[in-house]
Length: 413
Image (cartoon, rainbow, N blue to C red):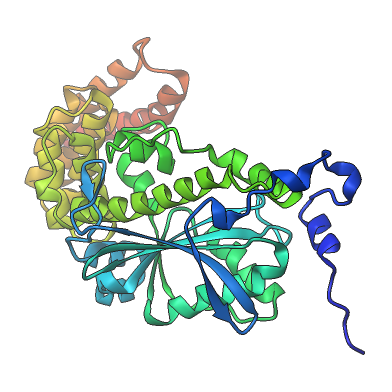
């Protein structure tokens, strides 16, 4: 039995678009502005018909804000952190930067990627390609054109793409009876890295926030908020007026340019962390924690030390000392760890008192000195500036340690 293809009306209904002349204003046909008259594009032939494509080119020295687009450092440490060693072998010209504009913001099988934007480096600069679905019937052609470009590119860079863009595209390929060409690509999602690096510096790590506060780039009035984009596409399907979509193409292009600049910046921060400006102590601290995560303890120690030389804010200064001290303890460098714990006691960090007490009890067998540090810690946590939770966290352990030390002192007296 041959399966009947869904009609255009049925496809529009699946998108949530009202169909029928009753929903259209009078004279709508006279107001139509097709996409071809709004943005300069061309048609690419595919086995499924024509696909509408818009291309833009940016010179090699183009900057998104203050950051260039060309990747200037290898991705060795990043590859280790994300757990995909294939990134180390990815050449800049083999990587594509992907961002989609969709008919819904929550995903799902009924969500279409009506605009697929990709950018990549060439010998002459940065090339941007946007595949637009003029109506639901063109989706097979759009996907075929997009798929043909991926053949020579093995690295994929997105921002939240693992959770949003890629699953949507994979679903659209499967829905059209095709195997997704994306699944085999090396995929680097910059959102987790951005969160690690700027979590303590910025309240929001959205791409728009990073673009403004980190890249130093401000969009023109051509931009449109992302939450409005699905409605603009529905309006276009309903009334044929593509003029508002010019802003959507601009929005998508800016996202992709920011992706390229952001990768260039993140890679330089992570791969060459000693070059981070002393004005950005929080970024130095973030790099130190990342290097600790990947097991490069020597570099992590250097970065913890440098972050503390750069006037970290109080709570982050405590964090840097704590993490660095335990790193040195695990590495067997007790002298350095002890020095850091003494430094932390001036900040009333209870763990430091405990670690010093352990050192004197177990290493030096000086129970009296160990008891002194334990008693001091108990006195500190009794102060009003310690919350009940913090007091509960430490009090039982310290009291038990105090009792044990008193018994040891009594036996050795």
